[in-house]
Image 1: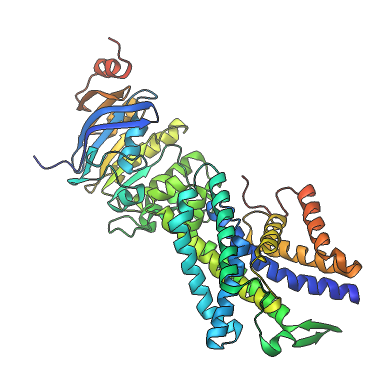
Image 2: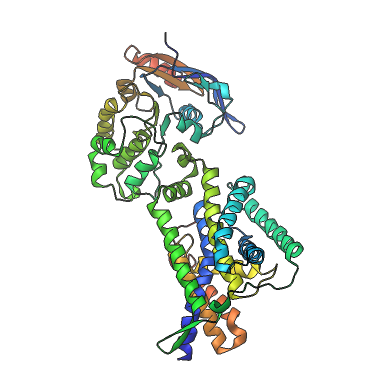
Length: 235
Length: 287
């Protein structure tokens, strides 16, 4: 069994007095797509913030390629090849579409993703490359946010609620593009409230409830009933 | 013709005020830091220029070759070593720390250079003039205005046409997400302060050639800088130039009416703009 690309070891996270994660154990293998589901406040976003360095943890609680990274800053984590597509897109409003993408690629990591490759994946962004990022629709902004993360040629990409606030037809088209994004050995963690979407694109799924892992399994094997129990904590 | 002359002289003076203000505008735009020590840093640039001139005999404008990189280095170290630690959700710590820095700088100037007014001698440049349409324009004010336009155009180019400027704007927009792009905000803020103090060095040298300065001269320069920034609109570099010009013209026209009204007229112009357009004439950022 090869070493996992990412391991969470008894991951704890707090916001002041409030504890958001309680000893979360998780492993992600190279090239694998992991879905994390759970209700609002379950700790999904906190988990991604811990992995991406936006929250500081004990170093050994997050291990990436065998290296403890829990205490690294977000810019240091990014340089190691972990990219986050944040909840709510969070584009840079004073940068154009093209500049948002270029700043994603400023680390100059080697890989298949470039401005041209992103424009090929999302042609609408090429047409609107000079637009202010705030002038785009929600779906187009989400494509910029995904493209911006891809521009760093990450080994691991983290998606936080990419369907949030988007029309169903837009969500469908973004999820259709995902297999083309996470191929070529790139690993991914998808945090999503839309359970069926999350299961359709992932190899394995973890369910979080109140900061603890309440279910873990292969996405195609897991039953609706098991998910309901793990999601809501009721039989 | 006297009134036209007052307006033209005020416009040229506005170039110097814009240089006072550009550094303030830049660091507020990037990191929302209000630097109370900015005027004293301008005076530091003047004293460093004076030191280089006295030590080497160079023309004050040539002293820029030494003073600009020195001030930039001071800016980077100051930001990384002290000011970064004050930045956060609370605006009070940077205000207090830069106020303290202002007091420290003034006392260091007193210790190092005494309270006597100093001035740099730029030779014939100080009195040279050209005649344009019946007006006699000083070469030094013209040069100062030209340098102000060049500096602001350069800053504008850096901000909107280079990867460094992209990083400045990204960190300014959202510090947390910018870090996800691999940007170390502490380093970016250090570079922004280095750039701001490089501009401040130019302003300090031109101040020291134009007029005499002493250890307490920073306060007035800080106020002129603030007024120019606020008249022009926070974070807008070209607006800062316009703000400087409005301030300069108000002062020279005020002085034309009554020599005692020079400073008062500038402050009144500032208050009028603030009353009519609280966000300045060309605001880029709010809050």
